[in-house]
Image (tube, rainbow, N blue to C red; front, side, top):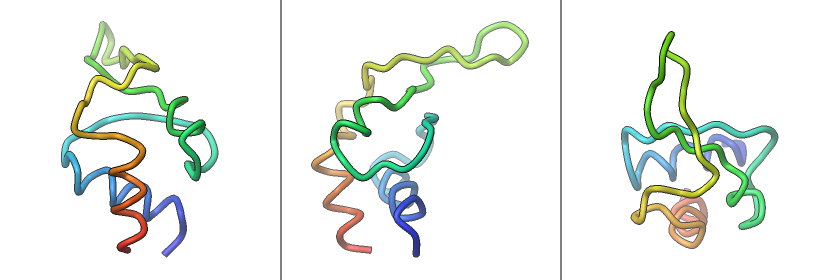
Length: 70
């Protein structure tokens, strides 16, 4: 399993319906802090995103712990 596969698996373990986007791979907290979190859909089904993680149940520490289990 690749690192990016582990990341998505861990993320969905913590919150199954979370939506976000990013470029590259997520291997550090700095990269995690640059995720674009989808907060809602705007007109024409365009995602409205924020860099501020709106999900208190998802932290880098928790994601990394789940990734390490995989």
